[in-house]
Amino acid sequence: MGSSLFAGCNNDDPVTPDAQPEIVFAKESLDVPAEGGPFQIEYTIENPVANATLSAKCNDSWITDIDTKTSGVISFNVTKNETAEKREAIIEVSYADIQPAPSFKVKQTFPNAQPEIVFAKESLDVPAEGGPFQIEYTIENPVANATLSAKCNDSWITDIDTKTAGVISFNVTKNETAEKREAIIEVSYADIQPAPSFTAKQAARPEEAFTITISDITTKTFRTTVRPGDQEMYYLLNIIPSRAAADFKTDDELYQYDIDFYTDMDATGSGWQSWAQEYLEQGTIADRLIENMEPDTEYLVYAYGVDPITIERLTPISKKTLTTLAPQTIDTKFDIQIVSTEGLNIDVLVKANDYDGHFVAKIYGSVDAADTDATVLEKISESWIDNVQIYGWMGYTAEMILSQYTFQQSREIQETLEPNSKYYIYAFAVDDEALRCSDIVFIPITTNDTSIQH
Image (cartoon, helix red, strand yellow):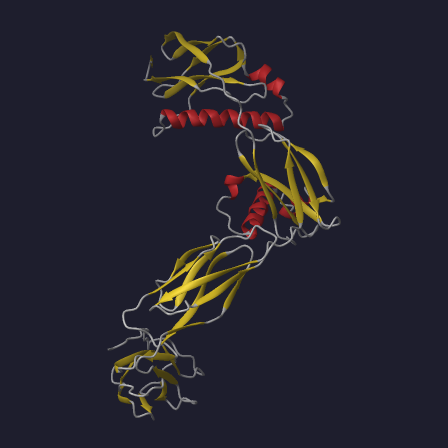
């Protein structure tokens, strides 16, 4: 039986004048079975000395035929262990008068020795936020061709991986509770009983610096209450669509997102901190009305304490998510009639059938070559949502938007189109909040150099 340990050897690294040579073994020790056989271990030489030679020796007679002729490899033979005890030998290396002499151990088991899994730790402490973790182990008295596997009955331990020899990797999900918890990960190897195991101990969720509550959610608004644990602390409260933070794994990434936002706002060059200071909060925010949100959209509400001068983040970020309501949809039919075309001029009449509410009717021209009907309809819908939001920021009420930008019963559209382009004539109903509440009815048309095709 043979075994090989792999490590690269590079004698071309630059050497500083005072650097001392060093022998680095692939492993500190090598476990070998009772039957013995040929083995080898690889090494590298850091800061090699010109013309220096390497040799090795062992004072134990059961280590024989030590060979250092191959650069980067020490080969040797281990005789069969016919005793009832495991044994260890030290192989010392001589190179350029390094003191103390570099060495590695050879550990040989005895016949019929039972295998044993030795973990680097009996337990592993992990933080509340979870994440990927691993624990190292060694196998004493290994069994030929035996494989190792691991399992855990607790669902918050996932993705257990034993493919890398000597390492068990796994993932720990975030602890959202106020209680610490423990899970036992059991290992299966060569029918060892009882099964070897180690414990993963996860901390409880830390006490939030801010308590955030959400209420009165509508299609475009909601109310939030924010209670800081420290009523004297200055803090920032921000609200963004959750999709904007979907790839963020840490509080630092979300904090950097805010810094980037304030930096973009800083057109005067006064510094992003001065812009952030305009949004500082202190004390409890009670039932604040948040307006001009997108319908049917998940939002992230978050707060964190800051230094009022430097805006350095002082606390973990407290977060809360909510989803605004989707508008109630209605089944509305629109009759889109192309009354006439002359050259690139078009006259369109849009009528609402059996519907006396408000609707939007336009000709959409921002069509790309790769667009499909579906992508164009998505652009039309998003454009209206954006417009309603912008009007809201400008102080428009829903009634003002409806009166100025929507129609009832019918609308006539007369436009001159661009040549060699694609357009969509479309219509959809809107509710009392000026939100789209029906499917989009459309007719695609195209133009060439001089006329309109439909």
